[in-house]
Length: 408
Image (cartoon, rainbow, N blue to C red; front, side, top):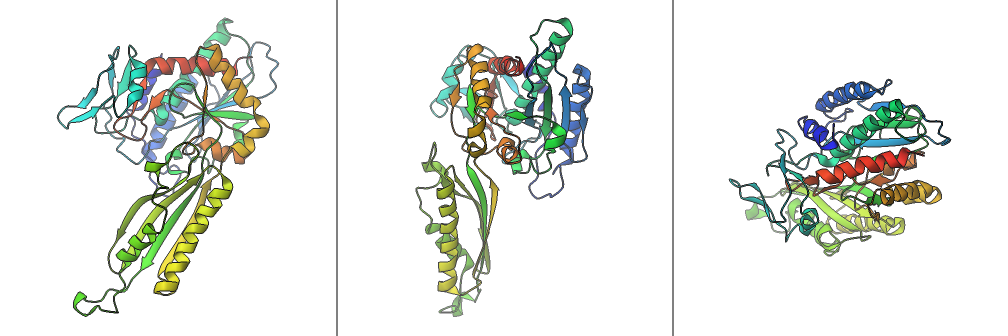
Protein backbone atom coordinates (compact mmCIF):
# COMPACT_ATOMS: atom_id res chain seq x y z
CA UNK A 1 0.00 0.00 0.00
CA UNK A 2 1.30 3.48 -0.86
CA UNK A 3 1.52 6.19 1.78
CA UNK A 4 -1.15 8.39 0.23
CA UNK A 5 -3.66 5.53 0.37
CA UNK A 6 -3.06 5.23 4.08
CA UNK A 7 -3.46 9.00 4.50
CA UNK A 8 -6.85 8.90 2.77
CA UNK A 9 -7.88 6.22 5.25
CA UNK A 10 -6.53 7.98 8.35
CA UNK A 11 -8.19 11.33 7.65
CA UNK A 12 -11.53 9.55 7.94
CA UNK A 13 -10.87 9.35 11.70
CA UNK A 14 -11.73 12.56 13.54
CA UNK A 15 -8.92 13.20 16.02
CA UNK A 16 -9.11 16.89 16.90
CA UNK A 17 -7.40 17.44 20.25
CA UNK A 18 -9.23 19.43 22.94
CA UNK A 19 -7.23 21.94 24.95
CA UNK A 20 -10.07 22.29 27.45
CA UNK A 21 -9.90 18.63 28.46
CA UNK A 22 -7.08 17.73 30.85
CA UNK A 23 -7.35 13.99 30.15
CA UNK A 24 -4.81 12.19 27.98
CA UNK A 25 -5.64 11.77 25.23
CA UNK A 26 -7.76 14.91 25.30
CA UNK A 27 -10.26 13.33 22.89
CA UNK A 28 -11.46 9.73 23.11
CA UNK A 29 -11.59 9.74 19.30
CA UNK A 30 -7.80 9.71 19.25
CA UNK A 31 -7.95 6.30 20.94
CA UNK A 32 -10.02 4.94 18.08
CA UNK A 33 -7.24 5.77 15.62
CA UNK A 34 -4.59 4.55 18.08
CA UNK A 35 -6.21 1.12 18.27
CA UNK A 36 -6.52 0.99 14.48
CA UNK A 37 -2.81 1.81 14.13
CA UNK A 38 -1.83 -0.91 16.59
CA UNK A 39 -3.82 -3.42 14.55
CA UNK A 40 -2.16 -2.18 11.36
CA UNK A 41 1.33 -2.34 12.88
CA UNK A 42 0.76 -5.91 13.97
CA UNK A 43 -0.56 -6.69 10.50
CA UNK A 44 2.68 -5.58 8.84
CA UNK A 45 4.81 -7.49 11.33
CA UNK A 46 5.44 -5.21 14.33
CA UNK A 47 4.73 -7.92 16.86
CA UNK A 48 5.08 -5.82 20.03
CA UNK A 49 2.80 -2.97 18.88
CA UNK A 50 0.51 -1.69 21.64
CA UNK A 51 -1.26 1.39 22.95
CA UNK A 52 -0.71 2.39 26.57
CA UNK A 53 -3.25 3.79 29.01
CA UNK A 54 -2.58 7.36 27.88
CA UNK A 55 -3.16 6.74 24.18
CA UNK A 56 0.50 6.48 23.07
CA UNK A 57 1.20 3.83 20.44
CA UNK A 58 4.56 2.05 20.68
CA UNK A 59 6.28 -0.71 18.70
CA UNK A 60 9.68 -1.85 17.46
CA UNK A 61 11.46 -3.84 14.77
CA UNK A 62 14.57 -5.86 15.72
CA UNK A 63 17.91 -5.27 14.00
CA UNK A 64 18.37 -7.16 10.76
CA UNK A 65 20.96 -8.19 8.20
CA UNK A 66 23.94 -8.33 10.55
CA UNK A 67 23.82 -4.57 11.04
CA UNK A 68 26.63 -3.09 13.10
CA UNK A 69 24.72 0.06 14.04
CA UNK A 70 24.58 0.01 17.84
CA UNK A 71 22.21 2.96 17.99
CA UNK A 72 18.44 2.45 18.06
CA UNK A 73 16.58 4.90 15.83
CA UNK A 74 13.08 6.14 16.65
CA UNK A 75 10.36 7.38 14.28
CA UNK A 76 7.56 9.52 15.71
CA UNK A 77 4.40 11.19 14.39
CA UNK A 78 1.26 12.51 16.09
CA UNK A 79 -2.33 11.37 15.69
CA UNK A 80 -4.29 14.49 16.59
CA UNK A 81 -5.25 17.37 14.32
CA UNK A 82 -5.29 21.05 15.23
CA UNK A 83 -8.39 22.54 16.89
CA UNK A 84 -7.94 25.65 14.73
CA UNK A 85 -10.36 24.19 12.17
CA UNK A 86 -12.75 21.29 11.97
CA UNK A 87 -11.22 17.85 11.48
CA UNK A 88 -14.60 16.11 11.19
CA UNK A 89 -16.10 14.70 8.01
CA UNK A 90 -13.02 15.47 5.93
CA UNK A 91 -13.61 15.02 2.21
CA UNK A 92 -10.20 14.80 0.51
CA UNK A 93 -9.90 15.08 -3.25
CA UNK A 94 -7.04 14.10 -5.55
CA UNK A 95 -6.08 16.49 -8.32
CA UNK A 96 -4.21 14.34 -10.81
CA UNK A 97 -1.37 15.84 -12.85
CA UNK A 98 -1.88 19.34 -11.44
CA UNK A 99 -1.68 21.92 -14.25
CA UNK A 100 -0.44 24.94 -12.28
CA UNK A 101 -3.70 26.88 -12.23
CA UNK A 102 -5.77 28.14 -9.28
CA UNK A 103 -7.58 25.29 -7.50
CA UNK A 104 -11.29 25.65 -6.78
CA UNK A 105 -11.76 23.85 -3.49
CA UNK A 106 -15.43 24.67 -3.04
CA UNK A 107 -17.29 26.41 -5.84
CA UNK A 108 -20.47 26.90 -3.80
CA UNK A 109 -18.62 28.67 -0.99
CA UNK A 110 -16.19 30.46 -3.29
CA UNK A 111 -13.11 28.88 -1.72
CA UNK A 112 -10.18 29.06 -4.14
CA UNK A 113 -6.52 28.26 -3.52
CA UNK A 114 -4.78 30.65 -5.87
CA UNK A 115 -1.19 30.62 -7.03
CA UNK A 116 -0.59 34.28 -6.12
CA UNK A 117 -1.31 33.70 -2.43
CA UNK A 118 0.28 30.24 -2.52
CA UNK A 119 3.13 30.44 -5.07
CA UNK A 120 4.59 27.12 -3.91
CA UNK A 121 1.79 25.41 -5.84
CA UNK A 122 3.82 26.03 -8.99
CA UNK A 123 6.43 23.54 -7.75
CA UNK A 124 3.94 20.72 -8.16
CA UNK A 125 2.95 21.02 -11.80
CA UNK A 126 2.50 17.50 -13.13
CA UNK A 127 2.23 15.96 -9.65
CA UNK A 128 -0.87 14.61 -7.92
CA UNK A 129 -2.16 16.73 -5.05
CA UNK A 130 -4.51 15.82 -2.21
CA UNK A 131 -6.66 18.82 -1.23
CA UNK A 132 -9.67 19.58 0.99
CA UNK A 133 -13.21 20.51 0.02
CA UNK A 134 -12.70 23.96 1.55
CA UNK A 135 -14.68 23.32 4.74
CA UNK A 136 -12.17 21.43 6.90
CA UNK A 137 -8.46 20.97 7.29
CA UNK A 138 -6.92 17.94 5.58
CA UNK A 139 -5.16 16.31 8.52
CA UNK A 140 -1.87 15.69 6.72
CA UNK A 141 -0.43 17.29 9.86
CA UNK A 142 0.41 14.73 10.97
CA UNK A 143 -1.42 11.77 9.50
CA UNK A 144 0.88 12.05 6.48
CA UNK A 145 3.79 11.45 8.84
CA UNK A 146 2.05 8.39 10.26
CA UNK A 147 1.31 7.10 6.75
CA UNK A 148 4.90 7.58 5.61
CA UNK A 149 6.36 5.86 8.67
CA UNK A 150 3.87 2.98 8.42
CA UNK A 151 4.62 2.47 4.72
CA UNK A 152 8.38 2.61 5.28
CA UNK A 153 8.11 0.04 8.08
CA UNK A 154 6.02 -2.25 5.89
CA UNK A 155 8.66 -2.08 3.15
CA UNK A 156 11.53 -2.65 5.59
CA UNK A 157 9.88 -5.69 7.19
CA UNK A 158 9.07 -7.19 3.78
CA UNK A 159 12.60 -6.57 2.50
CA UNK A 160 14.04 -8.08 5.69
CA UNK A 161 12.01 -11.22 5.06
CA UNK A 162 13.01 -11.53 1.39
CA UNK A 163 16.63 -10.44 1.82
CA UNK A 164 16.15 -7.52 -0.59
CA UNK A 165 17.08 -4.78 1.84
CA UNK A 166 20.31 -3.73 3.50
CA UNK A 167 20.74 -4.31 7.22
CA UNK A 168 19.50 -1.92 9.86
CA UNK A 169 19.69 -1.48 13.59
CA UNK A 170 16.72 -1.73 15.92
CA UNK A 171 13.91 0.65 14.97
CA UNK A 172 11.34 2.05 17.40
CA UNK A 173 8.07 3.71 16.39
CA UNK A 174 5.63 5.86 18.35
CA UNK A 175 2.43 7.69 17.47
CA UNK A 176 1.48 10.33 20.04
CA UNK A 177 -1.71 12.15 21.05
CA UNK A 178 -2.29 15.85 21.70
CA UNK A 179 0.76 17.36 19.98
CA UNK A 180 -1.33 20.19 18.57
CA UNK A 181 -2.25 21.45 22.03
CA UNK A 182 1.34 21.25 23.28
CA UNK A 183 0.92 18.11 25.38
CA UNK A 184 2.20 15.41 23.02
CA UNK A 185 5.34 14.72 25.03
CA UNK A 186 3.81 15.11 28.49
CA UNK A 187 3.41 11.38 29.14
CA UNK A 188 5.78 9.99 26.51
CA UNK A 189 7.76 7.15 28.07
CA UNK A 190 11.29 7.71 26.73
CA UNK A 191 12.75 4.70 28.56
CA UNK A 192 9.99 2.36 27.38
CA UNK A 193 10.30 3.72 23.84
CA UNK A 194 13.90 2.52 23.84
CA UNK A 195 15.52 4.69 21.14
CA UNK A 196 18.87 6.45 21.41
CA UNK A 197 17.64 9.24 19.15
CA UNK A 198 14.62 9.80 16.95
CA UNK A 199 13.03 11.85 14.19
CA UNK A 200 9.59 13.38 14.23
CA UNK A 201 8.11 13.21 10.73
CA UNK A 202 5.98 16.32 11.15
CA UNK A 203 7.33 19.01 8.84
CA UNK A 204 6.17 20.71 5.68
CA UNK A 205 7.71 20.92 2.21
CA UNK A 206 9.74 17.94 1.02
CA UNK A 207 13.38 18.30 2.03
CA UNK A 208 12.90 20.27 5.24
CA UNK A 209 15.12 19.28 8.17
CA UNK A 210 14.59 21.25 11.35
CA UNK A 211 16.68 21.15 14.49
CA UNK A 212 15.85 24.63 15.78
CA UNK A 213 12.48 25.78 17.05
CA UNK A 214 10.96 28.61 19.02
CA UNK A 215 11.24 28.96 22.74
CA UNK A 216 7.56 29.20 23.63
CA UNK A 217 5.35 30.47 26.42
CA UNK A 218 1.68 31.25 26.96
CA UNK A 219 0.52 34.47 28.61
CA UNK A 220 -2.96 34.76 30.09
CA UNK A 221 -4.02 38.26 31.10
CA UNK A 222 -7.09 38.85 33.26
CA UNK A 223 -8.31 42.37 33.93
CA UNK A 224 -10.73 43.27 36.70
CA UNK A 225 -12.69 46.48 36.12
CA UNK A 226 -15.39 48.46 37.90
CA UNK A 227 -18.73 48.72 36.10
CA UNK A 228 -20.72 51.87 36.94
CA UNK A 229 -23.85 53.08 35.17
CA UNK A 230 -22.64 55.19 32.22
CA UNK A 231 -24.73 58.13 33.40
CA UNK A 232 -22.88 58.28 36.69
CA UNK A 233 -19.52 56.87 35.63
CA UNK A 234 -17.31 59.97 35.67
CA UNK A 235 -14.18 59.33 37.74
CA UNK A 236 -15.67 56.02 38.87
CA UNK A 237 -15.85 53.54 36.00
CA UNK A 238 -12.81 51.40 35.26
CA UNK A 239 -13.53 49.55 32.02
CA UNK A 240 -11.77 46.20 31.87
CA UNK A 241 -12.30 46.08 28.11
CA UNK A 242 -10.55 49.42 27.58
CA UNK A 243 -7.68 48.48 29.88
CA UNK A 244 -7.28 45.29 27.88
CA UNK A 245 -6.97 47.37 24.72
CA UNK A 246 -4.42 49.55 26.49
CA UNK A 247 -2.40 46.47 27.50
CA UNK A 248 -2.24 45.25 23.91
CA UNK A 249 -1.39 48.71 22.58
CA UNK A 250 1.76 48.75 24.72
CA UNK A 251 3.21 45.72 22.92
CA UNK A 252 5.35 46.53 19.85
CA UNK A 253 2.88 46.41 16.92
CA UNK A 254 5.50 45.19 14.41
CA UNK A 255 6.40 42.14 16.51
CA UNK A 256 3.42 40.00 15.53
CA UNK A 257 3.26 36.95 13.24
CA UNK A 258 2.01 39.03 10.30
CA UNK A 259 5.22 41.10 10.30
CA UNK A 260 7.88 38.52 11.20
CA UNK A 261 9.72 35.62 9.57
CA UNK A 262 12.79 33.40 9.94
CA UNK A 263 14.39 33.86 13.34
CA UNK A 264 12.23 36.84 14.28
CA UNK A 265 10.12 36.32 17.39
CA UNK A 266 6.68 37.68 18.17
CA UNK A 267 3.78 38.26 20.54
CA UNK A 268 0.54 36.79 19.24
CA UNK A 269 -2.92 37.63 20.59
CA UNK A 270 -4.85 34.39 20.14
CA UNK A 271 -8.17 35.42 21.67
CA UNK A 272 -9.86 38.18 23.62
CA UNK A 273 -13.15 38.72 25.38
CA UNK A 274 -14.48 41.22 27.85
CA UNK A 275 -16.81 43.92 29.07
CA UNK A 276 -16.61 46.70 31.65
CA UNK A 277 -16.25 44.31 34.58
CA UNK A 278 -13.91 41.59 33.28
CA UNK A 279 -11.65 41.06 30.28
CA UNK A 280 -9.28 38.31 29.19
CA UNK A 281 -6.42 38.28 26.68
CA UNK A 282 -4.68 35.06 25.67
CA UNK A 283 -1.24 35.37 24.06
CA UNK A 284 1.56 33.14 22.92
CA UNK A 285 5.16 34.39 23.06
CA UNK A 286 7.82 33.03 20.70
CA UNK A 287 11.53 33.58 20.06
CA UNK A 288 14.41 31.35 18.94
CA UNK A 289 16.91 33.25 21.09
CA UNK A 290 16.60 32.48 24.81
CA UNK A 291 17.77 35.93 25.90
CA UNK A 292 15.21 37.65 23.67
CA UNK A 293 12.55 35.17 24.79
CA UNK A 294 13.24 36.05 28.43
CA UNK A 295 13.04 39.78 27.62
CA UNK A 296 9.69 39.29 25.90
CA UNK A 297 8.24 37.79 29.06
CA UNK A 298 9.74 40.65 31.06
CA UNK A 299 7.96 43.16 28.79
CA UNK A 300 4.64 41.49 29.59
CA UNK A 301 5.42 41.66 33.32
CA UNK A 302 6.41 45.32 33.06
CA UNK A 303 3.15 46.25 31.30
CA UNK A 304 1.09 44.43 33.93
CA UNK A 305 3.03 46.17 36.71
CA UNK A 306 2.59 49.60 35.09
CA UNK A 307 -1.18 49.16 34.64
CA UNK A 308 -1.59 47.95 38.21
CA UNK A 309 0.25 51.05 39.39
CA UNK A 310 -1.97 53.21 37.20
CA UNK A 311 -5.36 51.62 37.95
CA UNK A 312 -4.81 49.93 41.30
CA UNK A 313 -3.18 46.72 42.47
CA UNK A 314 -5.06 43.62 41.35
CA UNK A 315 -6.45 45.22 38.21
CA UNK A 316 -4.23 43.12 35.94
CA UNK A 317 -3.29 39.53 36.64
CA UNK A 318 -0.69 37.95 34.35
CA UNK A 319 0.06 34.22 34.26
CA UNK A 320 3.10 33.21 32.19
CA UNK A 321 3.79 29.56 31.47
CA UNK A 322 6.70 28.18 29.46
CA UNK A 323 5.64 25.59 26.89
CA UNK A 324 8.87 24.32 25.30
CA UNK A 325 12.41 25.40 24.44
CA UNK A 326 14.69 25.49 21.40
CA UNK A 327 15.97 21.96 20.81
CA UNK A 328 19.14 23.25 19.14
CA UNK A 329 20.66 23.41 22.62
CA UNK A 330 20.38 19.61 22.86
CA UNK A 331 21.18 18.76 19.23
CA UNK A 332 24.36 20.77 18.75
CA UNK A 333 26.31 17.95 20.42
CA UNK A 334 24.52 15.32 18.31
CA UNK A 335 24.69 16.75 14.80
CA UNK A 336 25.42 13.31 13.32
CA UNK A 337 21.66 12.75 13.62
CA UNK A 338 20.99 15.69 11.31
CA UNK A 339 23.84 14.68 8.99
CA UNK A 340 22.30 11.22 8.64
CA UNK A 341 19.03 12.77 7.46
CA UNK A 342 20.89 15.09 5.07
CA UNK A 343 22.64 12.13 3.48
CA UNK A 344 19.41 10.15 3.19
CA UNK A 345 17.72 13.01 1.36
CA UNK A 346 20.62 13.53 -1.01
CA UNK A 347 20.77 9.79 -1.72
CA UNK A 348 17.14 10.04 -2.84
CA UNK A 349 17.61 13.10 -5.04
CA UNK A 350 16.10 15.57 -2.58
CA UNK A 351 17.93 18.78 -1.74
CA UNK A 352 17.89 19.25 2.05
CA UNK A 353 16.48 22.54 3.32
CA UNK A 354 17.70 23.23 6.84
CA UNK A 355 15.64 25.93 8.48
CA UNK A 356 14.27 26.93 11.90
CA UNK A 357 10.76 25.86 12.84
CA UNK A 358 8.49 28.83 13.46
CA UNK A 359 6.62 26.66 15.92
CA UNK A 360 7.35 23.52 17.87
CA UNK A 361 7.11 19.75 17.68
CA UNK A 362 7.03 16.85 20.11
CA UNK A 363 10.73 16.56 19.24
CA UNK A 364 11.54 19.83 20.99
CA UNK A 365 10.18 18.56 24.30
CA UNK A 366 11.60 15.08 23.78
CA UNK A 367 15.08 16.48 23.14
CA UNK A 368 15.01 17.99 26.63
CA UNK A 369 13.77 14.65 28.00
CA UNK A 370 16.92 12.89 26.80
CA UNK A 371 15.81 11.83 23.33
CA UNK A 372 17.50 14.04 20.66
CA UNK A 373 14.85 14.45 18.02
CA UNK A 374 15.05 16.71 14.92
CA UNK A 375 12.06 17.12 12.63
CA UNK A 376 11.66 15.91 9.03
CA UNK A 377 9.34 17.00 6.24
CA UNK A 378 6.14 15.21 5.27
CA UNK A 379 5.69 17.02 1.96
CA UNK A 380 2.63 19.06 2.97
CA UNK A 381 1.72 22.74 2.93
CA UNK A 382 -0.71 25.15 4.62
CA UNK A 383 -1.33 23.03 7.71
CA UNK A 384 -4.18 23.75 10.15
CA UNK A 385 -6.57 25.19 7.58
CA UNK A 386 -8.80 24.64 4.56
CA UNK A 387 -5.95 25.32 2.10
CA UNK A 388 -3.90 22.37 3.37
CA UNK A 389 -2.56 20.10 0.64
CA UNK A 390 0.11 17.48 0.03
CA UNK A 391 1.81 15.96 -3.00
CA UNK A 392 1.44 12.20 -3.43
CA UNK A 393 4.88 12.05 -5.04
CA UNK A 394 6.41 13.89 -2.07
CA UNK A 395 4.91 11.30 0.25
CA UNK A 396 6.43 8.48 -1.82
CA UNK A 397 9.82 10.20 -1.65
CA UNK A 398 9.58 10.59 2.13
CA UNK A 399 9.00 6.85 2.46
CA UNK A 400 12.26 6.25 0.58
CA UNK A 401 14.07 8.81 2.75
CA UNK A 402 12.90 7.18 5.97
CA UNK A 403 14.10 3.81 4.68
CA UNK A 404 17.50 5.29 3.81
CA UNK A 405 17.83 6.87 7.25
CA UNK A 406 17.42 3.58 9.09
CA UNK A 407 19.49 1.46 6.70
CA UNK A 408 23.19 1.05 7.37
